[in-house]
Amino acid sequence: MGFSTGPGGRGSPLSEINVTPFVDVMLVLLIIFMVAAPMMTTGVSVDLPNADAPSMDIDEEQPIIAVQRDGTITLKGDTLTLEQLDERLRTDQAIRARDEVYIQGDEEVPYGAIVRVLAVVRAAGITKMGLVTDPLERVAE
Image 1 (spheres, rainbow, N blue to C red):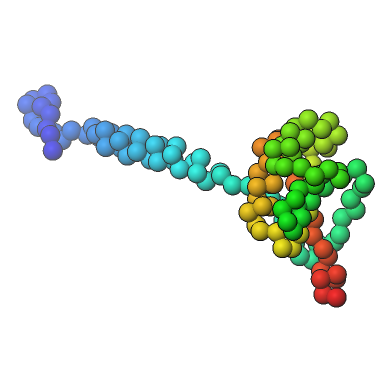
Image 2 (image 1 turned 60 degrees about the horizontal axis):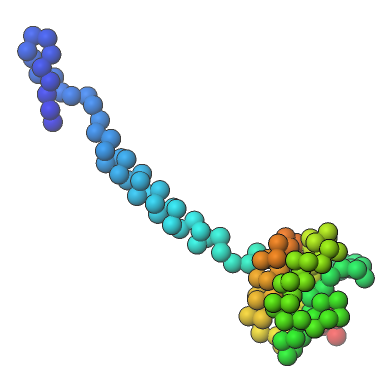
């Protein structure tokens, strides 16, 4: 601990705080958060409905992307590849105006195929996505 000489030559303790270690710790924390923040926001964000949610009325013009058992992707009756789907979502004015699509996947389709379609929809700038499922009443039959 240091002492200063005040009037009269008597030593009194220094009351200054060394902030260098504090600044060092804050800079390390800042770097950690800057590196970690982008990793926390990756993925596809989908709002899944509850299992007991009431059925929704979907009008005929609503764009539905269907992923069939063999991996075939259809939109408005046209069979598309992922690249064609991306182009169609970006250029179709009706879809752009709605900014909403529904995705209907066959029960046997691998999870990865659905995720790839969701990623294409998200990359095309569509902000609202819905997953079409069968109601619980039909499953129980």
